[in-house]
Length: 223
Image (cartoon, rainbow, N blue to C red):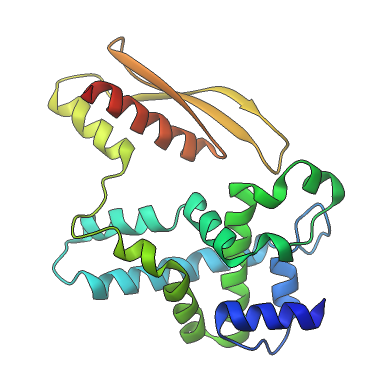
């Protein structure tokens, strides 16, 4: 396992680990051990944010702070981190308790996104900022480039602007259902603008469900 893990880290992140302990912890779910990925996730989230902000600052020298923030927010969501993790084969390296695995934690956006950030934290502690920056740029590369010249507008911000421009009430978001186990919850949220229109959507976090519901409502209003 250790040799295989070291090889996977080397090929995935371009760095031969000096110490596997941090990576092993980053890949360990709370159902398996008390020493799990949560603290490293906290650190990795900040390293990812810094590396991404620095990269966007370089790539889009003419953009104002607001546009750069929109790009950043779109690139560091839990869903995007989870998608990156899937592409790197993180699930196969994770250590999960039997119940958590049976419940689908190995493919949960919440879990995979957190583990991806934890791995970035482990890499930062083991190798420093430069290798962490290089690994992030390699893993996120195509996602940054496909954003194009215009910064993406977050659906909730776009819905808020639509409501203001059309003299409507501020959008409201209500959780109508929460299901699934603690480590892999599912939230259903209703987005509405007064009695004018509403739409519902589901996500693996309240924020993700709100974003999806806002996008669905915008589509309905545009139609």
